[in-house]
Image 1 (cartoon, rainbow, N blue to C red):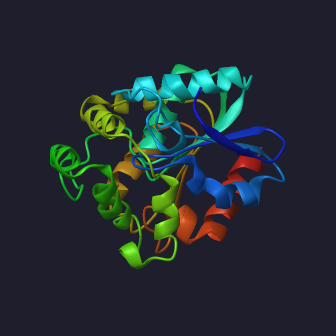
Image 2 (cartoon, rainbow, N blue to C red):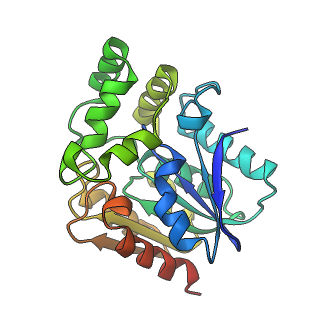
Length: 250
């Protein structure tokens, strides 16, 4: 079973971390929304508290692991928030299990693993992982998620939340990005969808967010001004307010 953190009571809200992340970096959302939701934050196979589990190399397999955990926890219906790579996992889950996902939040993510504007290719990142290991690469990549990079107040917290990822899991995720796309399936999503991101995100382009919002029938787009890739940490009050409004509006 995946390692997970859990806090609060009420309808289930599952928060899924992304590449080099961990469920622990959703603690501000747990604290803010625990009065209204049972917030569940899993660590994907090979990441953080699930580091000892076998790694996988596809978004579908990551989604399957998430669903298996929710089956074990007997959560039949839930709202689902996915950040970055976790947003890809959330998209795959919502498409494969539309009857189970009540509301979907796609946070700083895309409907394809093809990221032409990324600061380096996936192969270049993989080569660094093989040569130097996970820790130094995580330090560099995590810094790109913040306005002030490694001087950002929440940088050490975020880095620590993802600590422990295995080489196999990280390389598997990089392989998963290369072939994954659900761009042609977005219109299948019939649940309410919030697409949210900082407007200065270095990892994902605004064009991709707009394309997703245009293709999904019940989507709304929320751009947080001055926000970077981890706006849920740097502007948590603003992020949490937008999230709570979406989740509680009928």
